[in-house]
Image 1 (cartoon, rainbow, N blue to C red):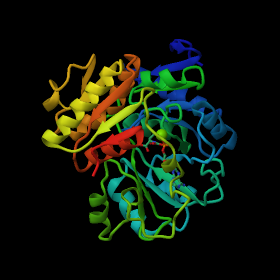
Image 2 (image 1 turned 30 degrees about the vertical axis):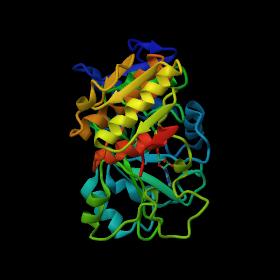
Image 3 (image 1 turned 180 degrees about the vertical axis):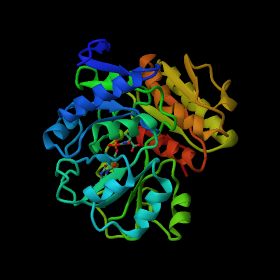
Image 4 (image 1 turned 135 degrees about the vertical axis):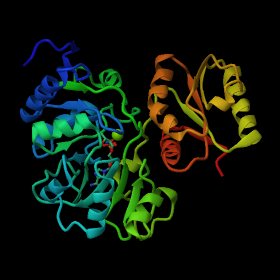
Length: 359
Ligand code: TXA
Ligand code: MG
């Protein structure tokens, strides 16, 4: 192993930014993966914690490092659509159509699994989640290692997903072999998850690829249990095991204030005033348009209300900064936005201990 890479509590920091570094970093990462180790790597959405998806012992190491419940399955990352047939079977033509249109990209497809996929990857489910990420380093790593990589987001279970190598190290230094540093992730929230185990196919997690985009390419309706219109007999068991856990949450309790206009502003002000009166140090996350609304001791501007892409890219980093600032409570201004904005609001609702002003 190349000893010139810095070690953080025993985890190799493989920098891929400078000329000539990238190839060596990829080679070192691939060797670790081929030996059954764990390497965090950047994707276009968030950093993933990868390992050989076909090696059950290696995959066990992922659950251990993340302290992830064993009933929450992993996404398998592939270098190309052609590899999907090695992991999934009876792939519906509609799924192939979507993959051809959106891959590489932030869309995960749930398909019937093949026997070759170890049960630990899919938490015993008969299905497997697959995607081809749209990040040049991720694709190069997949090709150099020559393996399908099982990779959940590279955070401790329940924490906000990491969008930089520093975030990965905050959570996992000392518990994984290496992190491949490719700078910040451009999108910032996790992929859209669409399951073909239901008919019509079901949107299990909103992301950058929206329901409308999927329906347009499919030329057919899909259902979205998250939005309460799930048309099967599903009751107690969530279709994506991940849906039942509190997610994406910072350490400090997060209060989300929804709505719009003056009513939302009044609710935000009332909440900040009452938390402050209880002696709590609050961290306030607002859009640029509401910067002056309350003199919070810690104030972060997410983006303009009209710029959901920047809001998505900054969201998890800002939540981590709030924890680093040692606030007692985080108050977040919600917004009504389609596309990536909808994915941002989905993550905030799941992170919140209380949603105020929701219809
Ligand atoms: O953007 C992303 O998807 C990132 C990057 C690294 O690719 N990955 C990610 O993985 O967010 P993770 O493990 O944090 O989220 C995977 C989600 C979970 O909610 C899990 O329950 C669901 O996908 N999932 C995985 N396999 C499934 C399956 N066979 N059936 C239903 N849901 C599944
Ligand atoms: Mg995750």
